Image (cartoon, rainbow, N blue to C red; front, side):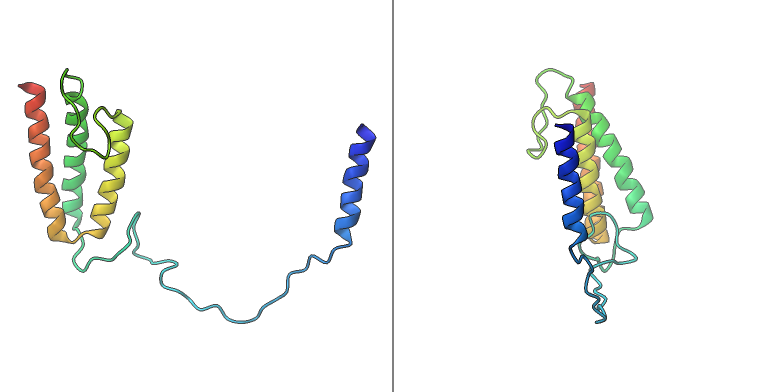
Length: 137
């Protein structure tokens, strides 16, 4: 059996060495396409908003997002409480909460206009307040 395997690999090497594996050289210039790479492109960014979120809006968003995940996770520990967001299910794990918040947050911050981020931040305040009242009432 050992000799058959050796013969098999030797036969492959002889057959491959007889092949001409040189790639043809094409000297035609390649046109640069802006969609390939953009120096200002962020994670999950598909459009470039005219008035993107400011650094302060981003900090506020991620602070409120962390508070949302924390209060949601704490609230789900109480009996009879479930998650209302249909995307993540009624009883998501902490990891799922973080992953969904990170992916959706990155998408929204990188594609939405500044005023839309303000609306999301205000909605986040309501959500965190609601979660907090569920935990401590």
